[in-house]
Length: 162
Image 1: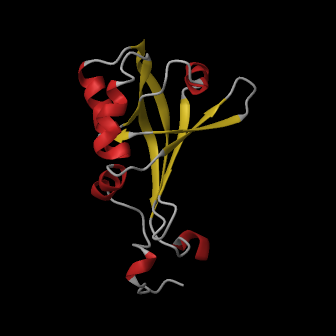
Image 2: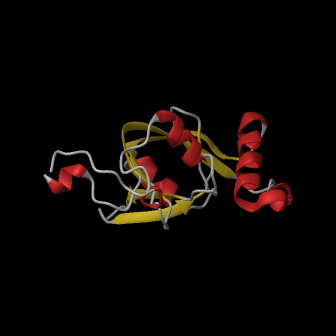
């Protein structure tokens, strides 16, 4: 099984992503699924818009979101981002979440990030949506990765074949 195999392009890269490919992937409208632990120790998943700055993943949840209460108690977090069709690009971040601000109204750099997210996820109507909701308090959350696991392709990773 140690021989190098050629795969058709439609199957994907068949390897993990480098830093530039991670940035390119997360620059798209990829929804992050945030995994937290609730007050009873149960897993809790929340889909959110995200922004990757090359070192950290950011998201801007609503002030009354349950997930933020979980992060206040257990800041360890798991994030899953995936392209759910071929070539099935997948990325997992394991790390620690930090509540940078909030709950508060967005301003400055925080608001600029929210505008970029709204445009990325909703297209040209994104700013219209955001402007209508700027009077609603939110949190600004930063996820610092301890580990990033990525893969693109439909074939099994080598570690499962050996």
